[in-house]
Length: 394
Image 1: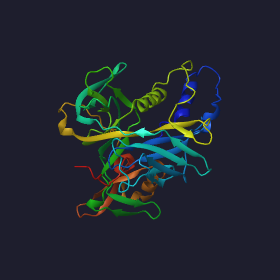
Image 2 (image 1 turned 90 degrees about the horizontal axis):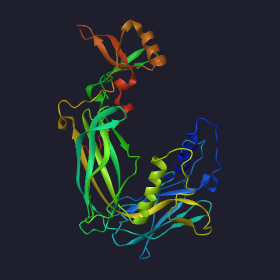
Image 3 (image 1 turned 45 degrees about the vertical axis):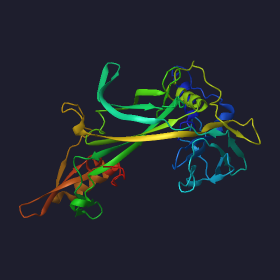
């Protein structure tokens, strides 16, 4: 997760809103290259994923991730579990070795290659609240003078023991991508030869996925029951291509402590409620890490031990009303025809205009006499997703 590591990028947006004055590069002091740590221990036999990086400056487009660190989870019974670095800056537990237990306390320890040691506060794992219901409703998203037809994904959650009180949600969405003009041949621009695809080789159905960037929080303070209903999780517009055939969303629910909730509330305000140059700029997104040898060093991020529940639903086109408006993202797709004796023109179309073969034509005897070309986005679903069907896809 890079929300915390994007912290300074958010500050840059605040200053850039003052477009009427000369550009200003503020001095962000010690936070320009601060270590940022994100991740949490989850209830049960689930992967704990920790990301290490540093905050990035105004001239940088992405964070610098930190590899070759030693990342360890300690528990209150004296056991330690070292995480494996899966890729640069990303560290994960082995589910066969580590299980998050309700009622146990956990601490994260990070030893960086330069010898610094960072430790989090101890975190007590709470019991997870349940996702009672995950569902969708047809809805209008009104934006100014425009309104978008779509579906709103909603969640109901509760804790009969009234002990959770603080909630956070993330989601991962996956949808079926089918291009209108799947390529049935390949053209070699060097020697002007072609290869026809077999039916099972035509890349026309793919699966695209995206993770949420928003921070969705709720609490039940002041309510007699620890119960939430109709919490909006994601609006899926009919103007996207996500509802054309089949759509799925996996909603992840985290049961937080009050301290963790407050941290995420500040993060939400920083990353989503950016206002004007005159809005107050906090000095630090306070987390629960410290350098054990230098307590004055600023460290961003928060380690928590969260109760966890998840649920998935599918939305098929047939689940929506017949008059539900879904706009095609392929209205721009048009085919161009090249006869077989226009091989040079076809090669130039592919090389200079970025075209792609969408099909071929044959005569009465089955011989190829020409080819159809179109934009690659119209012919190859792999530009928007992957061919491999996800394991969960029904």
